[in-house]
Length: 210
Image (cartoon, rainbow, N blue to C red; front, top):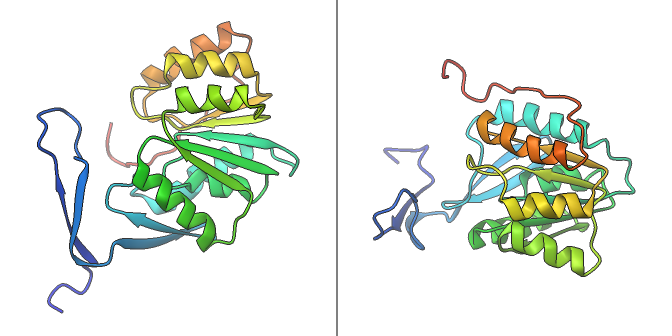
């Protein structure tokens, strides 16, 4: 009762000396396994190891912009690479025919499945793995995207994923980036492969920072 805003205390164990923050072992010491947030009418359960934007007001601005750029009319198959807990996927699913999401963190995929259920969204399917491995596998199975959304970490898109995009030729690619340097590098590859960059819209997620 002394800290009414604390929902849970979680311990993560990372024995490795690398720049990776989390280890594989996570224990809830006290309280709930999940915290909840709602953005744009979609409720999200978030576990300790799952990525979530920390500025919810601007997150809605960002996702609304991604949705606007996707220009969905309800007939599209959309692939969301780096889908995390399904934040962008579930926004897209409300306006697409079918959404496929892929994410490397197993806990995030569990959260994504739970979040689809939580919101009664049945046209989103998610799979754990590397986008650059899973998306080519889907492509071989005949799953092709009309629209592809990528929201990669700072290192940008994997080369193999960019090659798959150029092979698959989705009509439209929406690239959500947190690093202008790797964005420019990846856009060069996509432009050389026949795409045209139509619009860039910065979103200020962290005011008063560089």
